[in-house]
Length: 212
Ligand SMILES: Cc1ncsc1CCOP(=O)(O)O
Ligand SMILES: C=C1C=NC(C)=NC1=N
Ligand SMILES: [Mg+2]
Image (cartoon, rainbow, N blue to C red; front, side, top):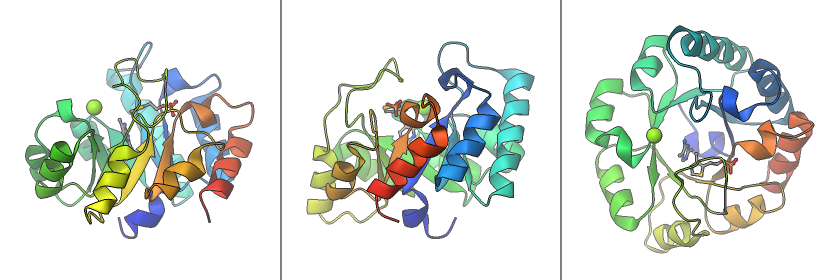
């Protein structure tokens, strides 16, 4: 994916457990509201698996394709390769970055990092962007580490790391600007959009506050 730094500006992440309404409808509304990138993250209580997960992934991928929004898959490398996703996002527990990079070729590779050490190793092994968080408290990821604010983003930038960075965790239209001011290139959001009365209005409000 080219111009990844711009693409991660309003990075919506969602799976069926995060939606009150039909996931397809939520995604269409979020796209109408101005998200710039989408990640399919089918995880947590009630998450689909097997054929149902594959079907939903393909349905959401079609919606993204029709709207020229790149489609990223969380965790499930084999799914990403099988459907020709634009990229994958992995956490520290999803295996060595090097192994994943060898498996996916030049697909975009996002890595969650929680420390300078993890960031340096991920960068050396081929990460294209970092997901850093939780920035603010979140209930969405039950095994999330404690929220640590924007300190790691600021430290990376102070030390001259220019890799694209997206903040994640408890981000809303109210606090999104502070994540950008800390040096992030974008914000990743799940429930502020997926639980909104109007996902379109929620995405629009976030987009407005992170700059066009
Ligand atoms: C996947 C993930 N990683 C760190 S926090 C988080 C959940 C973010 O969800 P929300 O935007 O609803 O706080
Ligand atoms: C845990 C995560 C952190 N960051 C991003 C962008 N996606 C994730 N799934
Ligand atoms: Mg993971």
